[in-house]
Image (tube, rainbow over all chains, first blue to last red; front, side):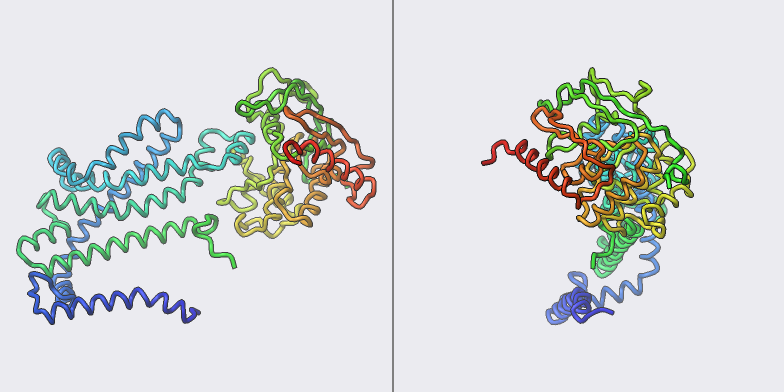
Length: 263
Length: 257
């Protein structure tokens, strides 16, 4: 059972949200702001309801790109980090290029990728992958390096081979770091997919949510832009929540970050 | 009962260890110069020295985890000690993502052998953790974790066992129980225990070497009367403990008033 303070703690963010939304609605109503300048939350909700099916279909397209990019980023990130863990030289040779990918703004690279990669889905995936990739590599590489020295000694003493060391010591030690990277990259992959859609324009036959927002902007359908934004925000929060849950599920029995608090 | 009659140990033939002319450096500092000593087979030998004297480096060198030049480190049959050494540390060094039983059988998995679950179960029962085989280390107390580590050390069934202050991180009553448990379960093996606790050395050691100086050398060797584990209540032991504390304090007093 939750105590009164705990209930208040849970209610506080919801109350604040309600307050802001009510203030927003009041601002729009009292000042007679036209909906193509700033729609009130009720107008946005009404648009969301009316346009819901179409927007959700578009969201699904974007979500597919996001999740595929996240999956590919996780696989390539872990592979590259494992390669880096094999020798300091490999790490030193590869890391600058990973950083290079990370610091170059995706809006600047996306047009090139869209020119070079003909298949629209793959082009969008590549853009989202570039953004999501670095936190996974950097975190996993740091995790692989962080295995306890005493345990490394023990593994050598008891005759562990390279593969056993990687599988039974380095990888579990890196898992919490990898999962932290995954939580960051989940949101970034969504941002990458959205940015790529903005740059790509119509791209293919299917259009994602970002393109719908852009389109609504051209037509001055501002409430629809807001509705799309709301959907995107909910999706981002959903991705983060799902990854946080997944992380807790994997770590709950042993890692400090997921253990129940000491009584 | 002789422990070797039970399922806990195949009769591993005890082997002593001979160390001659060992020189160890840590960065620019010489920790040990031309150090020589013997570990008699089947006995507890204690190395007693203040913290920072280089005891852990010494154990790592003996275990082959650290390169040594020119030194002679060999077993009685003149073979290399590689593969004959088990290790227990003051930190339990359990893998937090494995349960107690899988931690005990870790060595098997590392060598790609099938794990001997039955043996692990008996060893856990022997250290008083029969019901905790499935428990993760995070749910065990410090003393329990150290007992799992002891069971893992025994699971390896190696003739030579190196103990690096194995009971330094637990409270005094737990330490007392663990010392007796270790003395019983490790009997018959060649054990080297490094510690900074004179009482622990006197309770457990057939022989106690006192390290001091820099580079450290063996300043004195004590052979207390009677067989370990000795009772801490004996007046002779108390007197020796006082003497050893004085000696350690003097060796450690550089720069102190």
